Image (cartoon, rainbow, N blue to C red; front, side):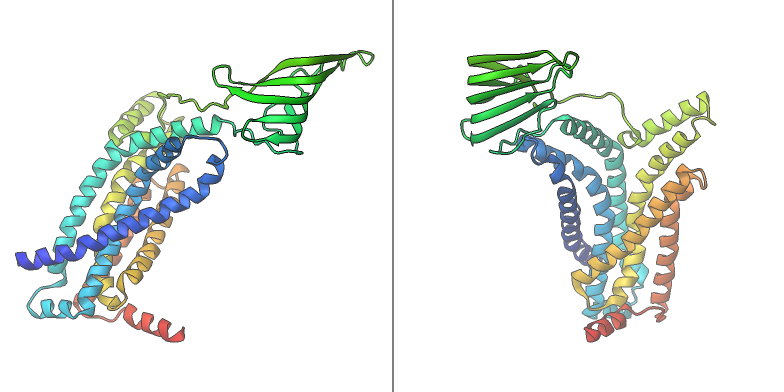
Length: 390
């Protein structure tokens, strides 16, 4: 029996890591596509960009592990069934429950590790992600110099130059429109100039040569000042052009462990439970979520084993496809339950545990029907028909 269990464990481990890696990469690539447009053009250090996506890996891991368990279980039992090994083991007197035992044990271990991860690692990563996202959003984009184009990247200033040397940041036939003082709009023109950014001053210093300064007074239509110069230095403030890191002591519900949130809930109940009801529900939803998603590892074994036996020949691709389908259904129930709990329609416990209960009942039903060899839904037949139609 130990040899068989060891063999079954080896059937689980490779597809689990393959599925985990594939799912993580897919979710991460989707995040990159969504966020890269907001980050690109801000002149961030590659290390900061890498750190941002690395910190986001925490919540991706929390989702990818249960999905990878489902992929591995479906793939393993699908292969065992396709190679008739499942039939041979069953003929030797082993039931489906016995064959599932190594998978349940490994899913239980992953469940425990994921609970620890959700309470010890995920809150800190979520906190650091939120703080870093705020720092990135506050940083202004780098100045995009383009000849013959009005440049509006600096607040209250408009720049225009006929010719621009990108390497030396030298501009020829340039005009600066200064709106920093609404009553005294100023236009500065020069034959040529050199633009440099001074980090310590958080400002652009424009060294101008052979130009004029035109100044008006909107409060006095008769006022007009014109000044010629051979050489002049114009300072243009540019706050937040330099990336600065900040710290924050505040932590939202997703940045706390289950114990910390439970303590916050007790304080809110002592203060004013009616007034704080919505916030209490939000905290309790997150408390239950830290445990319900890891427990989904066990539930997905119940789903994956009988489905794998029914899929027969499909390979890892079919396993991944069915896993995504079931996880999308699971996640839809989870998100819908969270919304209902936030509105006090159902309890947070019911909202977060209902998907596990429903999927668990379905899993028990599929296991029982597979043991009895009931043809409730033969996925192998469905797949063969689908391939013929193609």
